[in-house]
Length: 78
Image 1 (spheres, rainbow, N blue to C red):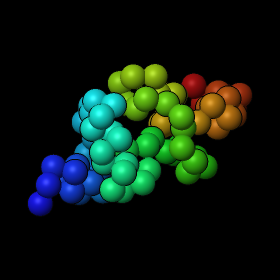
Image 2 (cartoon, one colour; image 1 turned 30 degrees about the vertical axis):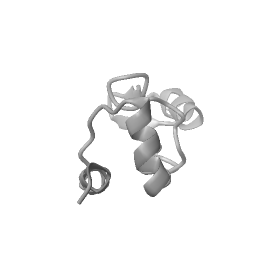
Image 3 (cartoon, helix red, strand yellow; image 1 turned 180 degrees about the vertical axis):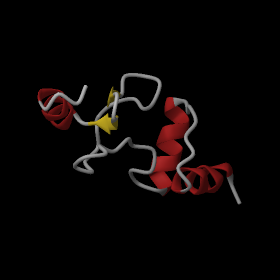
């Protein structure tokens, strides 16, 4: 098994680690969207870099996309 397949397996188990842009590209070439971060509310890609970078979280959860983050904060969630 190649490292790309190992990374895919880890991500399916919920394990995340930092990858270089080249590594992201390699994983996503084989498993499209695998390394994208998805909104906990709507399930759409957040467009963010991932946990520990610029992801949007409230004290009750995340990651959120911009729209769902605004809604969560508007509801007193964060």
